[in-house]
Image (cartoon, rainbow, N blue to C red; front, side, top):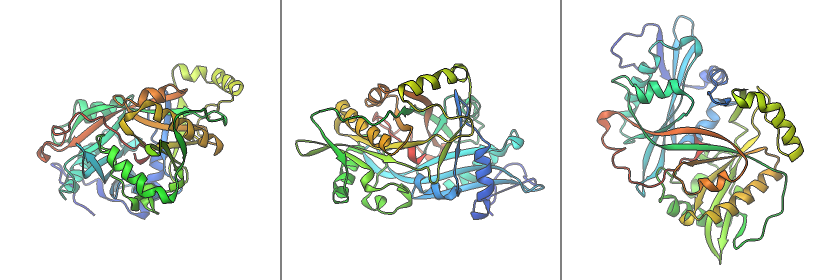
Amino acid sequence: MLPVRAGRPTPEWSFELAGPKDDPDIRRLLASSPMPGRVSVTFEREPNYFLGCGTMGHTYQVVVVRHRPSGDLAGIGCRAVQSRFINGREENVGYLSQLRVAPGFRGRWLVSHGFRLLRALDADGHVAGYVTTIVEENRVARGLLAARPRPHFPVYRQVDTLWTLALIVRGPQAAPPGPYQVRQGTRAELGAIVAFLRWHGAAKQFFPAYTEADFLDSPLTLGFRVEDFVVAYQDGALVGILGLWDQSAYKQTVVRGYRGLLRWAKPLYNVGAWLARFPALPRPGQPVHAAYASFICVADNTPEVFHALLGHVSRLAAARGYHYLMVGLAASDPLLPVARERPAIAYPSRLYTVCWKEAGDFHERLDRRVPYVEIAAL
């Protein structure tokens, strides 16, 4: 058990790093913690929470908070570390995620104590700063963590808005003619693919610095095969890469409800979807049958290349029976308008840097590069 360096005693609570015995309780907490929005969803981890943790970074630590008198799980938080490009250079960057407090234990200073423990873990010096996201409509979390933080909280500073688009996958369609040769990747191309990702990915802030080993039976890309890459060539030169990553074997997005206009329009939408051969909106309690458009990397951010890649990956997703293709791009990314051309359900979040005041100038030294975070690794 790890000590909590807090100013007040915590006789009711234990704070420790999670282990296999905590798995059932963590999964129940995630299933009972919906994210707010027009479409309320839970991000779940069946059949084992820890299966999906390796996709967040080369190392990770999960903090669990328990109510000593009852033994109930009161909250969790995760710290992961992955190599990313910062100002074009590779360095370790942290990722803070899955900050959850069980409904019956909110308002009891657990977040404060949890941050003290995360600060103690941060003392290992492995990273200069962190990135994280907060759902746009989660005003409570944004107020507590970013707008009105307590003095001992880390500092949250917004970098951009991150748009997650659930692109509606249509039935199989013929590929239109174009100047690019677009096809699925091969194992023989892995070296060239990784070299392309590293060279062109370095032009964006926070782009993961993947290696060839990361795509060869690694927890970092669990469930992704080299053949799931789609590559675009022009005149024999590689000009763009996109991947189709199915994580449903260990991570699920489950719809918990609809609100606002979408709640009332859902029956009408489903009728129209049936006529247009679109998928119907899932019923509450159903998972979203989706795959991720991952490793988005296009030379010079050429919109036409991304359009061709996205079309090919969408057709591949349709052939494999997915209903939605999840695309994540920052508001400032010149590729975002290409994705927005397609019918989609939009889910905005805010992208922040996070660091403790004494940690230095991580945020200040970021240059003006467009940010990119791999949403399949969030």
